[in-house]
Length: 377
Image (cartoon, rainbow, N blue to C red; front, side, top):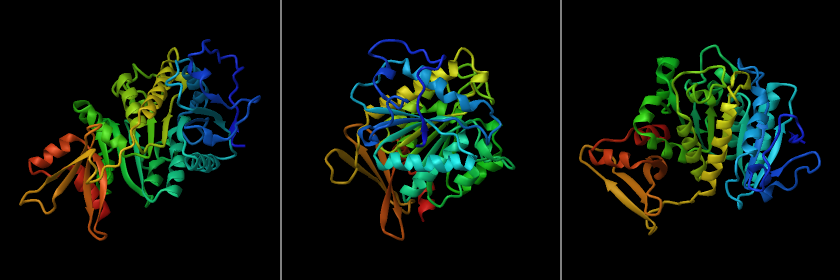
């Protein structure tokens, strides 16, 4: 057994009564009602009470506090089938936690469940990544973080990405919302040289919609709560007066939920010792709620030429070596771009925005196309 059951009788676990509450409409792994067949469910919530490989001591107690807030929200939709598995049992070593996460998430993904992880510290994202590494030929990952956790000389939650970014299976990686004064320029150059990207907070603020196609392509999304400004989420060991607003954090979570591909969404680095009136755990619970709301509204689309639900746009110019082919959904108005793989003669389909199509119409090659082209060729 990988999980400790959810203890509803803890003194700090006082749920609001009412049949409409979130906690009344999900299956909960409790001592009196242990886990049954998981394939009956669509979404699995799991807590990981881990902070041993981090400077953020105290983050390990946050999963149950997030649960307390989440269970007292109103249900998202009575048709979505959700199970709360409880907290991953504490292991003898941090590496055992990573491998335990890998095995659990692999099992959940194999049973077609979408996983919501309540952390704990962000280094445990690597355990989740290892599951996708085992199951998929190529993995796309998004982190939402004011820093990029690849700092020289750091391990754990400040350096876990150094190992993950070396993975040959990591096809597309984007960090959203870095703050320029918190990130070494050399690190940003290193990421660019690998044809990955980190988009600074100010750039996103000028066009928030650009985050939707980025999250749409992700398999795995890891959200560091310190990406949210301190006034909205004070419960972190690394607060900043700047960052995403609470409403923006919920919108990012909803975009992740809407994605056809996102199978694991995690919220990390909340430390209740620094929180004010449970503000950060309330916000984390609302982000989970919005992720599930997005999941309920998912529309699986398979953009192909010849499909009447899609329209194809081909942009060519004498100064461009390749034609750029865009596909637009006539149902959701979402856009994709095709990137040619020279050796195989095939194309890779990448989510994009209307702005990238408009850029191509001005005879400019979008950065997104160019990065993917260089990475696959």
